[in-house]
Image 1 (cartoon, rainbow, N blue to C red):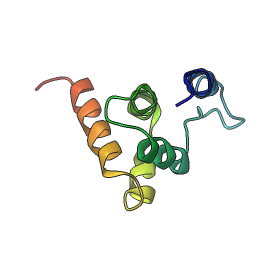
Image 2: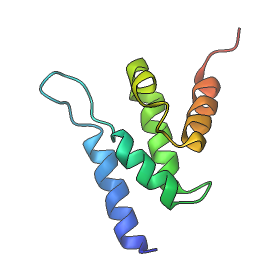
Image 3: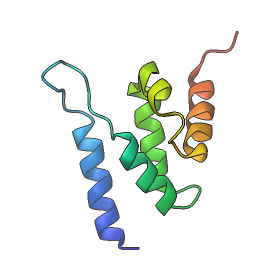
Length: 90
């Protein structure tokens, strides 16, 4: 894998996620990008971590409802673990 290209893509995704759209919402990669990254990388890959971090912080409930059938199960598992880790303990 081309480490320079990977780094460039991750920097671009992270930078874009900080820009607000005209409706005030923040950008995060769409389901197609998640599938490409998850099906093209191994567990523990930095690109996966970036996606999970973005969806943990900025994802909305409708995302899961609309795409759960097509999302990689590993992504949903990683996202679930991340969300549970962020939740305050009872």
